Amino acid sequence: MIKKVPTHQLKPGMYVVDLGSKELAGKVRHPVGFIADGKTLAELTGSSLKYVYIDTVRGLDTDDALAVPIASLEAAPSSPEEDIVTRGEVEHAQRIHASAIDTVSHVMRDVKLGHHINQTAVHATVDNIVSSVVKDHSALLCLGMIRSKDNYLMEHSVNVSVIVTLFARHIGYDQAAVHQIATGALLHDIGKIVIPPHILHKPGKLDNDEFSIMRSHAAQGRDILREAGFDAITVEMAGHHHEHIDGTGYPDQLTADALSEQSKMLAIVDVYDALTADRCYHNRLTPHEALRNMLTKSGQHFDATLLQRFIKSIGVYPIGAMLLLSDGRVGMVVANAGEKSLAPVVRVFFDQRRHCYISQQDVDLAATVPKPLTIVENLDPRSLNIDMRRFFE
Ligand SMILES: [Fe+2]
Image 1 (cartoon, rainbow, N blue to C red):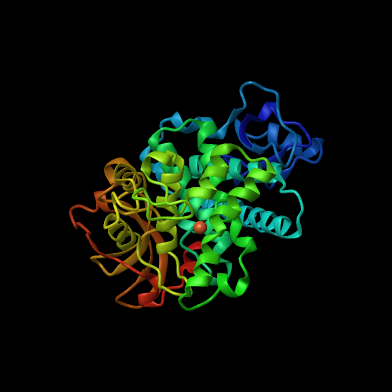
Image 2 (cartoon, rainbow, N blue to C red):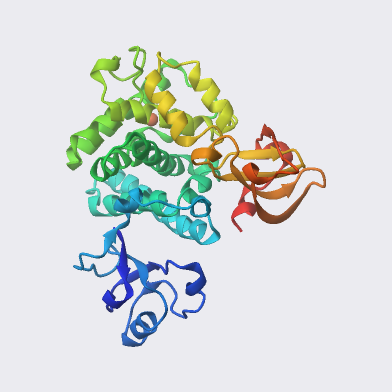
């Protein structure tokens, strides 16, 4: 759990994950990490920092009532500037993203070896994901744009958990429910660990027998999580994430009334993330193309109301989407809340006309008057041979 703690309440043994103020952080020599001794403590308490953020999983907790879990700060108002992903937030999100991938890998390995799943690590990871979605705005969503075909299962699990967190918060689920939904999403494909690799990674189309083995992962995942003692919602989400509301899904061909809202939400996010990733059998779609594709299944595969709410939660130009602007610059959407939904903030880093990387700059499309810039198109970065990793360097 990430908590915001007044600096005068810090003590040795706590683990600092963020110094909060980017301006003041540069003046403090203590890097993020353990407060190992009194000297480090004195440096923090003697600085101008009023608050820092600690991770109570990696270090000592505080019993101070003023220390607020970050996930409960979501109601706090934020200025438009605060909605834009900053470099520090991206770096913080990169650490959480890597650690979440590590957790999913360990869970998969433990299941394969017949060991117990470390639920404490799973819940700590989910806490960090939820906190990051709240605190770092959309940095984790941007990271979801970097995909590796070799690590699809882990990255997909983490991305689905991140996106469903945004969705669940948008719908208005409370903190505990968001955690539960994010957990179900993180572990929804755990049943794939029992699918033979030659089927799981087959580059071509699966034959009928292979497809039926592949489809067994939903029921297998449900059974694994139930046996491991996870809550009913997490178990149900894993078991039903491939069901369609018209009864054409699997494994049980359930229809809308028999499916929980959480499963229907996961079914939407699962397909959205899969369509926007490169797979061995299809090239990724842009977020825009993916949503257009999914809308053709609205009311059949997907709950129509929930699909509309999902689109509203991620925005017309979702965070992480690549856009080509009318001046030839290419960038990633880094803010799209509220009035920015049709005129987002785009962090440009490539010039299509000169075909070269350029210094990163945030372009607020709502504020480019008197020389208005417009969005030319949603772009697949591969079409210009753009290396997305350059965005995060
Ligand atoms: Fe699945």
